[in-house]
Length: 277
Image 1 (cartoon, rainbow, N blue to C red):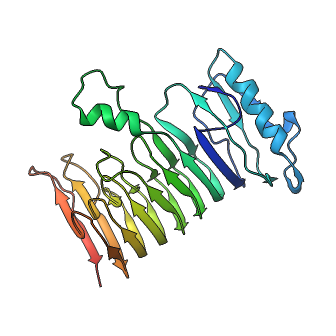
Image 2 (cartoon, rainbow, N blue to C red; image 1 turned 90 degrees about the horizontal axis):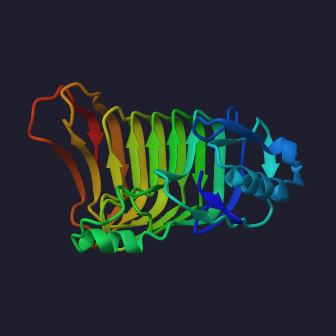
């Protein structure tokens, strides 16, 4: 895990209410349980110092680590700032969790230097880039009032999830920032995105194979590439996109409005029930 001083990004101010049924980091060797550091899952006692201490301990380890947050409600009344030094595919990743709410706060992953390197056509750029916030194989997710700034790659990814609500967030990256999709949804069901402003260098919302029952309403998009279903047909065998509704959306300075895009090759992928009233 990356070395941490006091928080989880270059500048992350997160007021998070954790309601977890499983641990929310990838597989690892050593497990650090927040309860062992004094966190109280009752939603009443301030657990800020326990979370800071567990991050410090885990990231001081020379082995791969997992921070475990058992089921409960954890009170973090003030902004916490973590600083990560190192490489990671996702800055903040939740996997296999149920009932997580992220309320308010800001993520700034300082992607400008990576964008500049890519735009200059350099062959020495760091490989890939990190997604700011991702949820994988999770249920009952709520993201409300979050600000995501300058992501290296995608800002928010919803992958293999069910019952997700994203409301009142702001995504901001330069109009020429490469591959900085605002919100990407794939292999997920019953996702709603409301009252959100997205300014970025790629799709404001991108919708991948296996997405079902997606509702998008009152989105302001631009700059960016619009709201896109696809690209589809990457694989010969892939799931379709079904029941996507987009309404009351404003496009301002975006390259496109609403579009469906596909590779020109054989695939059993499809789009069904897309409505743009």
